[in-house]
Length: 128
Image (cartoon, rainbow, N blue to C red; front, side, top):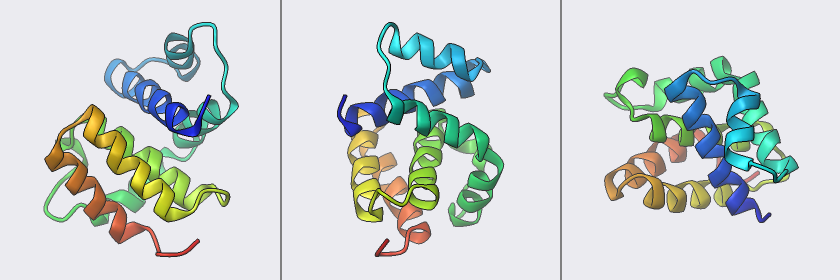
């Protein structure tokens, strides 16, 4: 599985966890069915293990928004991206940013992709 697909599946799992208060293992199982992808699982597990820290990074960068007002898709995507940016050294920040914007265009709308771009641009240093 390519990383883009792993990110999309991780987003879907995080969305299920957020929306349905589903367990991490159950969400991964629902999304992956009989497949397995280490990167996807690493993303979901990493976001959930560091959720409080990730949220503390996101919240001050929301510019007149509150976490509880964000759509579950946008919140899940922001968490996923912040995890990649802050916890994974093998993913350049610009790659994570671009991937997030493109995924937002698929799973959310144009306004959301611009919003996510703005939030992540404040969080991610240019080079990593």
